[in-house]
Length: 424
Image (tube, rainbow, N blue to C red; front, side, top):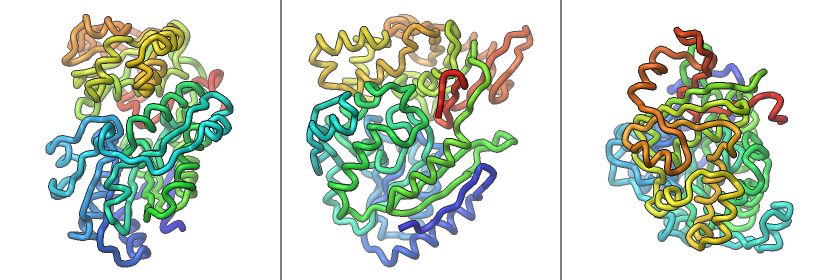
């Protein structure tokens, strides 16, 4: 059932209107005694999900017994991050998802079915995994909250990804990421229908029909004044809310360009991006816009590590971003990489395949470390002076010396592609 739907390319839903809509939808659900909220973490700060979670806290009071940020492979949120994203919400309600240890398998898709779904790309059985609290917490309502936006692994983020990846386990996450990499990032970005989504939809339809899940989906974009606004809000317990949100997101978050980009400068907000695991959205979301021989410059003042997880960090440092052939060769020869297919997928997706250069300007990582993973290095202070985000506007900019650049203030909010390279 759909409990609320509103959105268009010109809609701007205010905070007050979002609250009214959420309260109206919750009233339709009837009385609940034990509610679990599953919002994104700080890496989706601009999704509107934090504010919505505070509305749930206000509406349900003590009936909201648990909040589990959908961390996936990410590090746990700090108290400072909780206060920033969920102001006023009691810290005692937050539960940390442990993707390596705290999950159960709710069902397994056979290798034969996986092969059918992936058109023969992968034939290994896939375990649908969820955090134990989601499955056996005794909740009479589970609210999965998040933003639908182009995504490198699953085409369009959110819906059941928030559960099967956000609260999923190592085996399920690893294989789903690898399916996405095998299918090809250029074939998956911006597309709601793809093999990875089909796997998750099959799991939803066959393994968790008894869970009382309701999805709250936002679509967020910049208006003409450059301000982030909520363009769409969809609440319901069927795939239709995701489809409506995905259709709108493709219209407002997808930037189709007439010509390829020769130089792109991306800024990574230090409160959101502290690793290349997350910061490489700068690569994923721009690769289809980059000109052959072009340069991507990533201003990353918060960069401290490569992986959010210690083992993933080690693997990135060991194997580096060296393109598909070398990653597949390493995968064939090394058990540690085979045991962490999501890392292998990331190494493939975050390489330019030598088509354009990637220059990182990190705040806390050395030149030797950056170059060891096959990226170029530039001094952050020098590059910030040259490309000061405070002086740049979204999109095309002409610098004082006449240089032409394309600036992106947050790569997580969209997808950029050259018309000649992308057909939707």
